[in-house]
Image 1 (tube, rainbow, N blue to C red):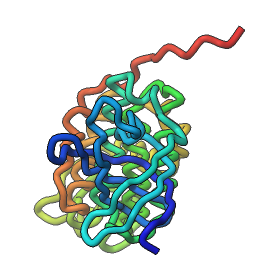
Image 2: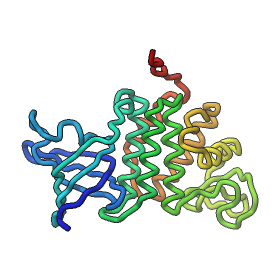
Image 3: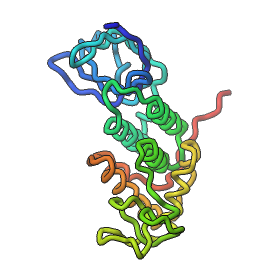
Length: 256
């Protein structure tokens, strides 16, 4: 059918011509979709702000040869809180960029959609450490993509850890007998925290902040592992790494 319904999360949008945009949307049933939103940049556009990044939307689309066309869009969840805070924006940008790099066009991936939706919902709750939520999301994305790092045993021989070396190319922690020339020395505490982060629920990750030296080392391992196995540079990592590790965030006032 040339016209189809979907729900999805807007990953990014780029200008097209004088009034249009090409929006990239991770949908629940059709994978990643690139579609034209005609007239969206006009003041009286019927789409308004419904197709901004991070927005969870219900869509009606017309299937085209190279690009689909958005004919109708309704907001399911605006995630306005995420777009109003720099730390939350940095975490959200990391999530949508990683999803964009992993997802294939028109290839159904419900687990990826649900992981991204869960990540944005966790950020909307204003966690104490949004970056930790994004890093937990990255660890789960690696597992979903078949690249889960070995953290409790040697990635080469399977010898039980903890081990004091880590190599993205070798698959994670490696013992002294197996470590290659590219493997770096790491603290067992950093490996243990990264393992705990990978097992944690997204909603819990924002309260797991460790001491700064442990966090810095674990972050370097995770970021390097992600870029190595996704074979992509992650532009959002630079901003995410600058966010405070444990800045308290005010909670919304209770309704009277």
